[in-house]
Structures are given as structure tokens and as C-alpha cells.
Length: 261
Image (cartoon, rainbow, N blue to C red):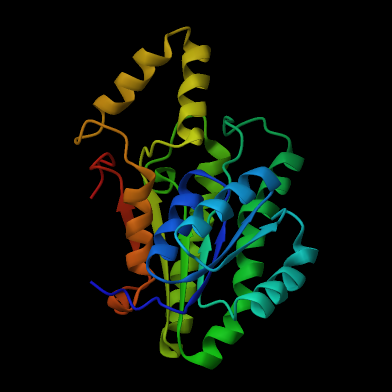
């Protein structure tokens, strides 16, 4: 199946590893030009090197999403080297584990800026170009916590849920311009983030990592964690011409883990 992405330009936030790197590769496999952004040079260089091995045209940007002042300059660099952004993948790092009560307001504010305001501001920066061309894809990766709040991840549950409301509202505003906006929800995907959360739980509860992981996988009907590339391929499909009639949706990639309908 031809996804119709050859020659399109994609910006993948959080592209240094895990889900972001897998998404960048999946889009590049479909012929898209890819800009990968992340806070660490080593991880971004690793993604760029991997994409170049498959012949992709790509660039890497060291980008602290909490710094809203660099957005225009970074988008301009992408436009000059790859072309205007047709596909935006909003993929931000997760905040530290935390309970809902008793957190420093400054922590909430910092995380809101990097996880929510940055996504909105970057989208606003590329949206006029998408509108003028009559085509665009805005994909926002969140967490299963937006559907079933995860214990001890209160900041993630709350802030990522705000992006669901924003994306749904945006989808109705831009549909007439040929632009879709969708939320993608990962379940337990085998990334370093999930490994770190499992390790933290094992330490907190005085159990082995093997026991914690087995227990977690036991809650998933498919009986395993997902592969990053399985998640990435769903994102690539939603970015494609084939998914032109899907917008304002929340798409789960969770192996059946989330119990709600």
C-alpha cells in the first residue's frame, strides 16, 4: 500500500529514541523527509544516522521544548533544508512520577510549558503553511493515562488529557483546510520510559523487576509489551493519504490493555 508520503516533510518531536525514533523511521520508510528534534545531541545523532542508512533525507535539531523562543528559528531551518512541514508529530517526554496532591506549583508550570504549551505553539507555527497548501497532518502522542489514569503519574494524566481536548477542538477548526488532527495513545510499549517506570515500581514495592514486568504484561490481553515499530506504523498510516477521513479521533495502540470502551 502506498501511503502517499513521498516528498512530504515531517517534524517528529522527541525523535531521539523510543517511540519518536521508531516514528521517524516509519515515515522515512514511506519516503518522507524527516526532521527529528530532541534535547540530547547523542540521541538525535543516532536517529539521523539510522535514517541515513535507509537513504532518508533528514536533519536533526537539538531542541528544548520548554524554550518557546526557538520555535520560529527551528521551523525556518526545517523549511530551508527540507521544505515546509506537512506532518507534525507531537511527541514529548514524560514528566517524573508524582502523586496528584502536594506537588510544587512550579513543577506543574514547568511541565505544562514543555508538554502542552510547546505542542500548541509549534502547531500554531506550522499550521498557516498547511492551510495555504490545503494539506496537513497533526498527530499527538499521549499516554493510556488519558483514558484510564495511571497511579503515581498524576502530572502526565492531567497534562496529556488537556492535549486531547485541544486536538479535538483543533480538528473541527482545520478540517475544511484538508488538515487532520488525531491523538494516538500508546499502551505499554517496550521503550526505555516503560522500563524506567517498571524499575521505579520494583524499587518502590521491594520486588524484582522480573516480577513487576510479568505482572504488567499479564494485564495485557496480547500478553506482551508492544514493539515501538508497531506503534510507529499506526502513526505513519494516520499521516498518510489513506487516512484522510480520520480526524478528531483517539486511536489506541495498546494490545487491548485499556479496559474501557
